[in-house]
Image (cartoon, rainbow, N blue to C red; front, side, top):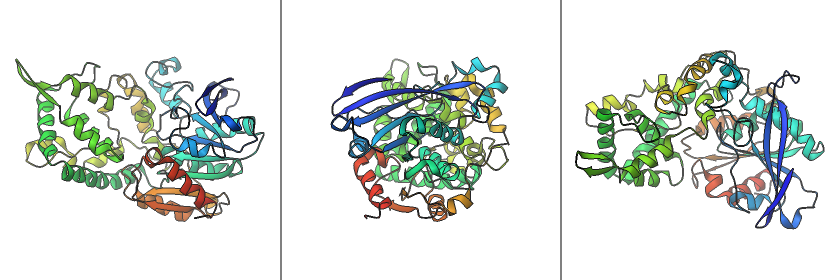
Length: 432
């Protein structure tokens, strides 16, 4: 362990080894990284633990500086563990560089099957006794972290003192197809609200898409920018300031050159950063697998379901006169052609998409008998997680209390962290 200080906090880095497959504890092992954070004034105190599970899948825990955002509120009463979930951050990484260590595409796909919520929760239960001496801890789950927390309640509630969920109550039984069938209308509403705010961007988006359809430029990073890839910038519209950020990105798309209009270097750099999965490839490879539990393959559900919503078809849009509809939080086969960080993973991703033997993630009977205090923030028109799905799940978990709000978008924990955490703690303690 290594300990050091930042303003107002003491940080301690922890590394653990856990089985790749918890059903085979004598088999291959991987490393987990977690960062402990405690208020400087309480560094020696016997405090309860709070473990933070980041959204994703595929993202390491946020790197805070001092007592930023919700962390400052949490440190008033907890010792916080920021866990890099398996395969992310400083935990044994999973990416195009490391996966070939495990063999060809079939072996890689088998390896990737061990990076869903079930394995993440088993990891938590492996390291919890080492840190708490066996005492249960509080889990704070953001987005996919809330999916993990719901699985935790289903399989190991004895390890939980309290559960706090923000923008991450999953459907207990929806298939991947049903998830995306509910998602596209939500994304359409966000796009329409974006164009209502910035009507000048209707023409700007069409001009960019028309240019891409004709030229199919390759960005300096090697990313092939197609109209469909451009549409996927709509993922930005689910954040509190996402519509503004997208507007600013579009406004400097073109520059005049001796050969005519061309995409500006600034635009290309911004788009390459926004679209690349180099830092979180598990998000792309496993995104639909987080919904797999019904013995059917997900089989590129977002791409198949998109065919039911013609307004999202870029080619049809460009052949007509309507506005270009951006897409949202969805992964498509073309991602593995466009993104150089994903191209080497294409065959493994196809096998993951075809996998049909996913184990169930949630236990409705156990959740109906839940005794762990749970509170969840549900965002009124969350672009990433369907509100109706979340509320149906909230009703299915005994004792769960919800705070349904339109004060924040999906990134409420980031945008209003202390307030959000305060509300959830008050709810779970029946103080609200």
